[in-house]
Amino acid sequence: MSDYLANLFSLAGRTAVVTGASRGIGAALAKALCGAGASVTGLGRSAAPAESVPGVSYLACDIRDADAFEQACEQVFQSEGRLDILVNAAGITLPQDADSDSFRVFDETLAVNLTAAYRCCEIASGCMKRNGGGAIINVTSIGAALGFPGNPGYVAAKGGLAALTRALALDLASHNIRVNNLAPGYIRTAMTEGSYANPARHAARLERMMIKRWGMPEDLAGAAIFLASDASAYVTGTDVFVDGGWTAKGL
Ligand SMILES: NC(=O)c1ccc[n+]([C@@H]2O[C@H](COP(=O)([O-])OP(=O)(O)OC[C@H]3O[C@@H](n4cnc5c(N)ncnc54)[C@H](OP(=O)(O)O)[C@@H]3O)[C@@H](O)[C@H]2O)c1
Image (cartoon, rainbow, N blue to C red; front, top):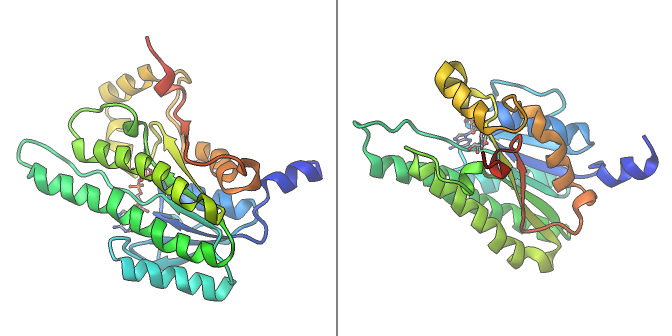
C-alpha cells in the first residue's frame, strides 16, 4: 500500500471509545478501528465481552448511566492523553407483540438508542474539545430513513439519532469535531438472528437488497475507518448507508 493511502486512512496515535463493542456490529467496528491503528476501548454492560477482539481493551458501562460513561471516557483520556473517536454502536430492539406494553417498549428503546447516545456524544465531545477535535460515528439504521412495521420505538429512535447527528455536527464543527451516521441495512448479528433463521422473513429481506446477501458486521469496517479518519476530513452531518442497496431500490 502506498504511504499516501496508508496515511489517509491511518488511525495511528488516535484513541477511540466504542459502545456496544461486546458483540456484533460494535465488535466488528472496534476491530476495524484497532486494525487501522487506533487504541480502542470497547464498552458493554459486562467487562467480559461475548466477542473479545485482540488488542481492544474493555470496560463495563451501561450507557444509560451517564456518570458511568463519563468515568469510562475520563479513564481513557487520563491513560491515553486524548480521546479522538466515539462510535455509538450500542442499541436494542425489544420484542413487541399484542401483550407488550407499547409505551414501555417505546420509552425503553428511546432511552438506550437515542437519549443515552446523545449523552455519550455530549460527554465524549467534551473530551475531544480538550485535544482539539475528533470524530463521532452514530450507528443508525435504514429504519432512520424508512418505515418498518411493528417497531415504532426503534424507527423513531434511529430517525431521531440521525437528526441528532446533523444538529451536533453543526454545534461541534467549530471545535473540529465531525459527526456522521453509519446506517447499516440487515446485518447478521444476535439482533437479527430471528429473522435470519426464519425462511420467509429471510427471503423477504433478501428481496429488498440489490446485493443478494445479508450483510456481515465486517461489511461496515471500511465505512467506519473512512468516517473516523482524515479520509473524511470534509465530511460531517451526513449518512453513509451500508445496506446492500436497500434504501436505493425501487422495484
Ligand atoms: N444487525 C442489524 O441488522 C442492524 C441494522 C441496523 C442497525 N443496527 C444497529 O447496530 C448496533 C449494533 O447492533 P447489533 O446488531 O450488533 O446488535 P447486538 O448484537 O444485539 O449488540 C448490541 C450491543 O449493544 C450493547 N448494549 C445494549 N444495551 C446497552 C446498554 N444499556 N449499555 C451498554 N451497551 C448496551 C450490547 O452490549 P451488552 O448486551 O453486552 O451489554 C451489545 O454490545 C445497534 O445500534 C443496532 O440498532 C443493527
